[in-house]
Image (cartoon, rainbow, N blue to C red; front, side, top):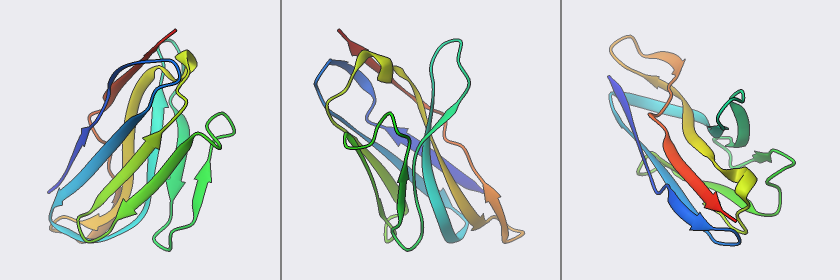
Length: 121
């Protein structure tokens, strides 16, 4: 009913940059907040950044000033531009939009499949 496809992960050296994308498709009527989360091995999943439908953003302290979240509502895409990457940013990154979709037209959170980001020192 609602599918998410993430891309843009990979291996990068410390100080480098990556841009993650997450595209939502399927039966979608509206998307409210969109967010990026990450989970490192042996750690709990944590919030990285969120963006509201009005464009307000929120960042984890650990990524402020280095990461930028943005969205393209015409294409149902949320981006995460990651600059000045550090080894501690290594994790699987997941997108999570709050979507009104599917046959029920119900609001639900949907999770992407995750994309691996590895930062070498």
